[in-house]
Image (cartoon, rainbow, N blue to C red):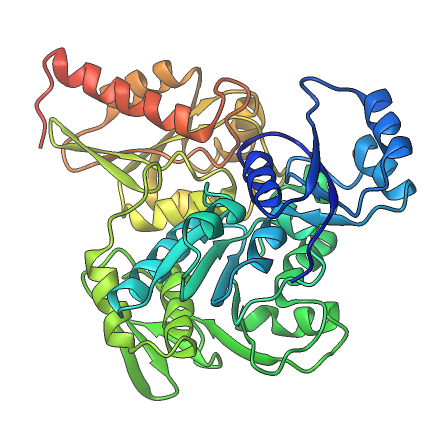
Length: 436
């Protein structure tokens, strides 16, 4: 564990504050610069004045940011806050990345480990900085980290005893530019070198590409998916290893081809890699309470179900939401697009959706792409979309908010968008709707 004498921290959100607390507790001299209160001249002056050992970077800073460029030109190594916190953890680590499903997976894994009797806590992109977790929980057996591609850009020696890449789907291409760069960034979760004890869990169809991304270095690869070619695969409510059913997910949130083949199969592999019986993982799945804004059932009005899936900020996540909600769906979609190809989702829209109610910046493009598949209505705002969908939906049908887009044209976050959807539901109840 490397200790630092002088440290520059860029960004003073929750991760920057946690890094400062940890470093000051170790006796380091720390300078924090945030864009809200400083500019490039202040940064350059600090770089000229102080020989910093390291620069801890908050994930909001892209590698192309002018501050990051200045730090690199000064020859100061960059370090992710995630790696700083991880380096102070004395136990083992499970790390999970992917385009979709990370938070749900780490919550299930952490609860599984706790149910098995281990001291485990969640950190990272889940919302609790790794530095904060290790400061408050110095004696953990397992640190369970949700890891974003932004955090992986500046890791150096980071690795985990169990590392999971759930999926790689179009996301954050405004920052990573191409799918190849994005995939290679995600692959950094497996470390910069082969460590024989580390289990590297990947979707079976991505294994050849990831092996190429990592230079063909030998690793302990474990594959998962829906295909029997995977080491762990999902079929008909159960996860199999070869011909043996190792985990029964019947009656749980994860009993679906999409969630079962990704999250279910991967968590079964994580359980066995961590030495936890799959029966304990299945028990944790049966007890699992979904996170807010992720396929969150809000209630019923007049026999119509309302589901808040505001966290679905890309089209692949929307597809999961549609799969989970069955048939006769009234879909509210739109916002700020993360991708431009709307064609791959047409089949599931045709199968499951009655009407689509479009909002935000992308509504015209989605209308042009999807109106020939099923009825589309450009509504502009979430309020109009909610009211229009409510008037159209019949008993036994579902109104689903699963936008497939970021929220930043009309809301500060996907959480705020989801809260507004739920508020509209409760306002409707109070005005005379019946609930169930």
